Amino acid sequence: MATSPRLEKMEPAKITPMMRQYLQIKENYRDAILFFRLGDFYEMFFEDAHTASKILDIALTSRSKSEDGSVPLCGVPYHAADPYIQKLLDAGHKVAVCEQMEDPALAKGVVKREVVRVITPGTVTAAEALEAATNNFLAGICAGPHGFGLAWADITTGEFRCTEIIDEPALCDELGRIQPSELLLASSETRLRERLYKEYPAIHFTGIGEEHSQIPPPVVYQIVQRCSRRHLAPGFEQHPPFWPISTPMPQSRSSSSASWSSTKFPTLSFWMKRPA
Image (tube, rainbow, N blue to C red; front, top):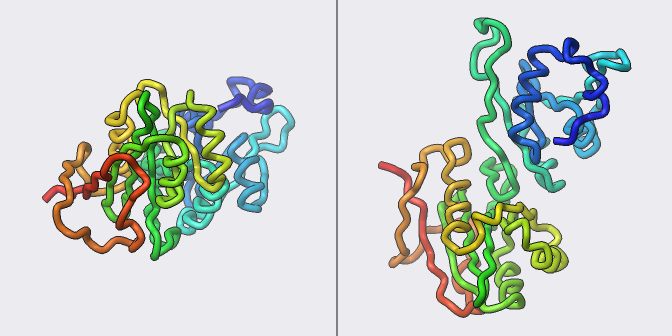
């Protein structure tokens, strides 16, 4: 998170314990808009408030009217947050939801707060935000000396697939068929990202560290890990077991994922298994 000019003006003594808590949590989620629970609202501060107020068309205000101590903020009702979150996702942002972890009436000092989930376009689970007739795929790509590894999953149906692609044209064709909402790609793959973005500007690109993108298994694991986090898909094990499909696939929200013919290698299909 870039330091706000207004924050730089604030004297340390003027930063309240609650705002200090916010800044500590925000430090761990610099690339997301932080929904910070305060009573019946999710509040956003500083740059997040400026960004969100424009996208959501809501009022931007301040916690203090003094020039040196003003903190830009905006907020949305916690019980009606899903449509606002979806608008931010549609605009290409991640959203980190920070909840109150204890009853404010019983808390001693600042109410304990924690981020309970991070929502990205490929990890949406709210039914009203999804199209009933199509999958919402989170995909990952890694480049290798002989082609590309590609994996994709839908956490709302448990569908998971992976394959290898011969070249960039075939990769573009495959992504055109899959139509993922979010794509994990090594941050260093700038040329490939630019090429894919020109073809599919609606896809949300998420950069991952080079150490997780050298070979297919780590990219696959990135998807599995993101899809199996407790706060994204309650009930999944931390490292869910997978097995190849040998029988017809269960009915999913998409009926168009039957064959993938432009790749050099077969597509492996799996289903994420919930613990008994």
